[in-house]
Length: 571
Image (cartoon, rainbow, N blue to C red; front, side):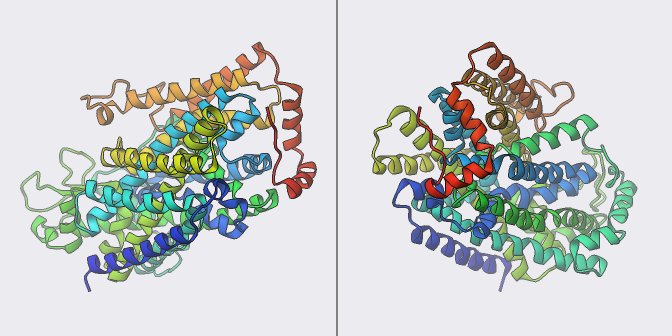
């Protein structure tokens, strides 16, 4: 049976399961729709957090970035994993103690202001929309290769599927779907990694194969011989300041991601939230410690397979011809000698590979069984769709719950709120699909922009809301707006060729910091503005200051939580 037929069968089978779960877990009230009724077990929530957090950027793009950036690509590993630990230990338990539905809910109540709630909701929409665009791009790439359709058609197919189970099931359906998707994606990631590790080094454990073999040194020497950058030397693709800025932006951005934070609201109590964080860390570590090995193995295999090979002979290879037809792999005989050559100069390099296809193409390059190739395709779709559905719900919640219900229509009925929530998911899918078809960068880069926006807007407001009882609404609102506007404008100016079609970026960088790391500057501005404005204006009401003290006291809150399900404050 062909790879395409096997892929189709596996994709239909897994999607059938996802859609069944969406129907089975159909949300009938807002508590089920927004926080799954707060009844998800800690282990299942850990798997759902892992699937929600490990998006197409982690599954499809991260190993590709490491493969091409070498040592510098580890900024993604350090930033995303470090950010998850920061979120799990520093913020999640306190947010769960507060016991609301969304991040804007927390900010609105903590800062006793519907204006703060609205600003946080708008920030959530911007962050989630940027993030989900990367996921839809990933879906489009997978479908374009395995269904042999245009990427735009692939994105539209993905939009239809994710809209179905997100609109119907809400958070409850999404959670149980993500549990299944986690096991699909992790199997799809580990099985080919184990096979290729054994094939290249004789050691079946990818992490050990990379650490205790000379494969990385061999790849590095191979690249030097071809005139490419040394693979294992630092600061070859990014400057030292950018390594620091991008890593920090990804780290604090992770801790401010609304669709991940809301997952800690779906368990019964704070203790379950802590266990969820622990389980998620275990599940995430399985993929993140494997990614560097895949990056090295993939790059080594690609160079060995294509370098110095006659171009016509290369085009006879099935995976080469099919990826070339998608436009994501380009072979050009620039010097007319009939052979392909990798070089470090774009004017002479004859093999151009889109970084987003590395993981998907690796099993084919390594000549693994068709079933494994099909499994990787299903895993890539699971990773992209699991995160996309969580992001769509975050956007829907921001509009239907935080803006429509909490700000404009506090008397809205349960049915009206559910109707608006589902309508918002549908509209968000349309927007996400547009940006998936016209992305401002690679999947991993687009996702990095979302992390920068989260770092610059929501993270300072959440952190100060928990640990600075003197922080008031004026300071929080000013800080969020400053960070969001500065970072958003900088990203637009630095990415103007992709977004506005200019011939060159309006601004190349800001003090040497690229678009992916600019969120750090936005975050610093947010902290400074928040602090200055809050100290220059009236202190928060005493009850708010008491509440901040209260949510930082586990013993007191645990007693309250077991009886009420969360601290409630009315203003």
